[in-house]
Length: 570
Image (cartoon, rainbow, N blue to C red; front, side, top):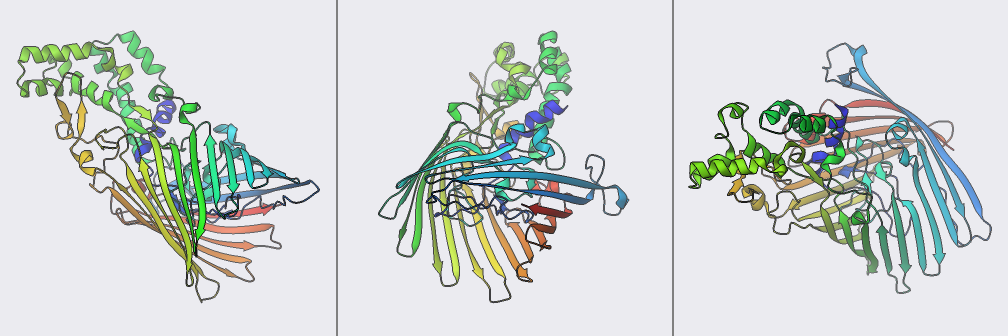
């Protein structure tokens, strides 16, 4: 069963996580901040919120310098809403001793080299998931940097953040995200480093120009099973399993070669769902960015070319297969007269005998047999035109981003490709005159264009009238929303305070989604003990999603946890 679940953990991922990624970036620095926020416009948990590898570089130094650093950490999580039997749902009132516990030990190691005109840095991470599932990411990052006057050349396995937003971005597109642990790890730890070439030109007029090229693309990672598997990917997994197993008998009765059908079903792999290999130049990414200052405002314009990191699911062959071949198993005894296609042809005025012949013809085509009736996954082509700005207004540090997301479905009438959309971010932070409190508030939004095409669309079979969504009694458009809402707006707030000469830090993060009324809280309290090298952290995750069962968070409403962790940096 694992093979089939893995198939589709990625499958309807296009409908799972919505929005863009989040991170702190500085226009003056090439180092990425490790603090995070937002889900999809993401939030970090507060544990390990400091960069493990904070070594500084001095490009003007005459003597080469090597530096080694790292961190060892462990976190234990108690899930009061789940028991210890594969994290099955359990009530708070049941036996407390059976509550689920998660243990997450991890070691990270870093090396930095700084010469007169060059620098090199690398980071390694060791944990159980990387050893078993993603061994290629044990080497987390490496970057080689060369200074050539006004030019800077960078290459390696890198994490690059674009956009002036603080902890929230809609213009950050080069790196994928790892959501197998939801949004709990810090943002920069969730980012997946990409092979990348980066050139920077610092013009004498005060303008910076950047060019980026990545020869391949990595997709977002989603949990294929367990407590963080997205609800919609689990649904599609069930659909594929049903098609491959429960309906196999009907398929065989329908005339397909029994040996071929059984052989295909038992040897099925996830690769069958993908049209292309992501490790190819076709999925390379490129971008240009210019940042500059006009008066008190820092501005930027950018262009990104690549693909969405989460696939769209093309269900056309699956729908046609079911419409033409069967509605109910009894059809294979009484004939095909109950098929959707037959009824449509007769309704359109075609004689019964001709309609029957047309359906029989379509059923005979290889394209409507089980091996070709599964969903097809494809990463939609994406171009992003971006604007960004940051300035200081009184005590407020403000920033904003705007993105126009252009796909191949400009008219919005292709149900299997994401429609064009616009996205925005606006926010500020301020030091309040109360103790050491800092308030950071961000809003993000997205609006999908041509929503009428989503509601009133359908699919077409060659030689047959259009199959409308109303006739199919379901809407399969990749952008379809069951509530009819094609905008998403959320408020992200982060409140921090420090005590005892900054040895104690309180951090409360929250995300509120206006359309679904979901609320997520991530409180954290950290203590620096003995020295700044050792940190004890108490944290938690609270998910309030009761209003809308169609909300992705609703499936995770029992995933609240309390955690205790410790971290030693060296």
